[in-house]
Image (cartoon, one colour):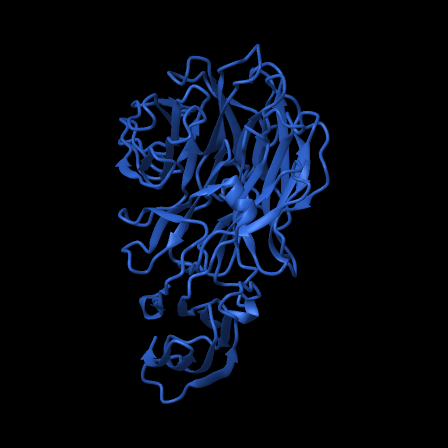
Length: 532
């Protein structure tokens, strides 16, 4: 969004404490996004996270405080961080390469896996996976077999290979690739193609992307990915050496490359995870994805399988509200008890469908039903379509400790983005709600077809808003828009109805905007007169 439409934000803080403590991990680096996080199952006090491009975060106190480090590798580091930890307490940091002798995007010619055996403080230089001359390797995910007899300790990596990234040539194709390590990530075996079909190279709905692996009951390697409005599934019964025939296990409405207002882009790519706990849902596979339904908008969907992916349940809507957009989900299983946790952005509480919250949904009945909790204490302002917001967030859970991680916004920062987590535990999440901060936010958003002015305040207030929009700076004429009224909210009651917290006004498009606004409330009486 152009600087003329920069955020105008007023924060009025009162003595209100958040029920879910939110911790800002990173507000020092410029524009961090695509965060990934993992709790050490051997020591839950140790948590490692990462974000674009080479940010590396370490906590030794369950996420209360963090060290910010910069990941280094002789292969180069170019984002798409994926953090994983095994049952021995080893951490793995997977990312894209940045080969020095090549130009972007051709320098992304392999996946790099770096390993740490000291709680994530230091990582090895790493090993490379999937190099295939100038073909681009992208969107990788990692899992380890820690449960079967025949293939125990194998590491499995799946990703997308592009013949030529963003090429419109129909002869340039994308495919799903796979490789394994049998020596603890000291090296990976040569990559193989496991998808029976191929997609285009446009990095869009008809590109094969989002391959995520999970381990079945007997060490089966299961992988799901998206393409052509479908979600595909395949599995190997011999530790990844040979593969079956791809099957379509779900339809993905709107494809995987989703579009939401004031967001640069949003992926609905699938995540596949397996329950290896001792709960009654042991060995259940869960498939999570995002989609966009006509007249409904963004939704979070889930299926599960109890027979290794041979058959699947019906689709389940994770989000408890159908209004507004829900998007960018990620999933984790607490392997100590089988509870399912999902993090996502949610716009259901805002009638404008622009502001957003971070929500965590949890299920104790094997994904059949979910309870959703709002995690942030005040709305997140989307950064606008010119700021890369990332393709995913993350969540990790173990022994009742839950750590979602997400990209937030802060207009005082150079890159406008920060990385945050919340200090959640199972009891807190089940029995408490977030207490909202008494915050006032207003912003004028430039849209494709119209502009929208949004005013949010938690509390009671009267408002009178007048906006004049001109297409040109020196034009004598302009269109006028105005709205007035009052909102009431009892100070001791949390009401999540968007109509009780937000006022929005749609205007015509125009680059020069004058705002007149008066707000009257219990604790303030303010007048504003400014040009946006």
